[in-house]
Length: 211
Ligand code: URA
Ligand code: SF4
Image 1 (spheres, rainbow, N blue to C red):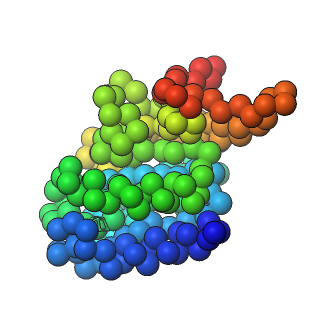
Image 2: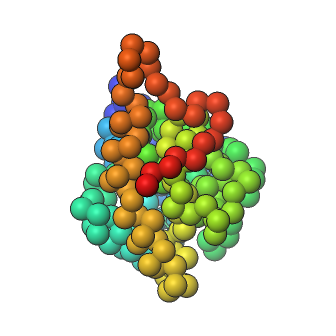
């Protein structure tokens, strides 16, 4: 068995030469994602943009700077969290990823989640949200933590959306401000209760009432 770090390195190696979908034709660098193998929080965006494609690293452009601000407001650094995307190669001209591309790339993300086993998954934008909450509307559910297959998933607006639409900035700030409390709640829920193991919401998504 590979340990978490070895598993992540192996995934990154496969992603860097992957040709499973046509995004491989136009990419310069695939962007597997980065962060500690033991991260409590995993942030999942949409796909690499111009700068990410140039550098092979996630969220290094304007949206990334805002993301770092959102983390810093909550005493978190980008090196504290694992950051990746639902597609690892840049869609040409930053178009939306297509269903076939999301499907082709999904296995890498699944393996990353398995390797890291994060307490909290934050989805950034609708494509990432749709993987966990296929029927949800971001305007209705943003900031609401939900158990999905025993993991706490928190859908949030994409930081790039707030750069275009300033009114979303305070919304994202408020949603991010719950993060540390959510980690605490997730850790609490994961603790064995009595003799047995408590795995909340294994079967269906369930709203977590926090306050
Ligand atoms: N937007 C994303 O969704 N992902 C990145 O890595 C950068 C910008
Ligand atoms: Fe492979 Fe994903 Fe890149 Fe498509 S987007 S080529 S599936 S790594």
